[in-house]
Length: 297
Image (cartoon, rainbow, N blue to C red):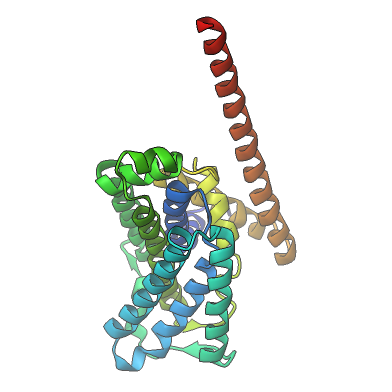
């Protein structure tokens, strides 16, 4: 069943909802070397706002979700860039606050939608291709262009690679990192809108493993916890690889709780590989510096 056409389409539809937050985390990893642990809560809250504001019109409900994501991203960016708070702590705190707001807003009850036409964006297809997958491809292409061919992209790599050198070169490091967190919050909100559209409902359980899955995909795609390194195309491939793995475990009948453990092991594994590569790079640089000192002494 794995190689059937229907299963391939299922994989594309499943990974499409994981791509936006993973792309946003790639921006954060490149620009700061930190992570955004609030993406799961932002995703769930954005889905709830999309369903809750549906009575006021689809456009307004989507706008409310996106604005919320941008506000949370801006808050994270200011805490990290201006407040000098470690990204792990800053985003863990804001994510917890957002989750509390989510529980209060939903009263821990699912919010169902009633506009069936809205489900097109999360569950519809154009021909045989799922609409959310098309959106994911467009977001990946736009993100790649921004990172590679714009001034902001070059600034992000410079700021993440060496903050002091970037600052001395006249780059607005704080502003660059702040924008990266805004992008992460906005992309998480887009994922929330798409998931709400697919399910035509929202619950407090959405996005529980989004941070773990997104970090793993970004690092598998070439991003580094040291910053200044990464590729959104690599992240997309990382999401696809993890999606295939998850689909395979489902077809094999692996229990959900074991799948959670597998996801955690994958994250640990990719972080360990990243750490080993960082250590090797540092050793090579130290050996090179020692050789230069010995040569010119």
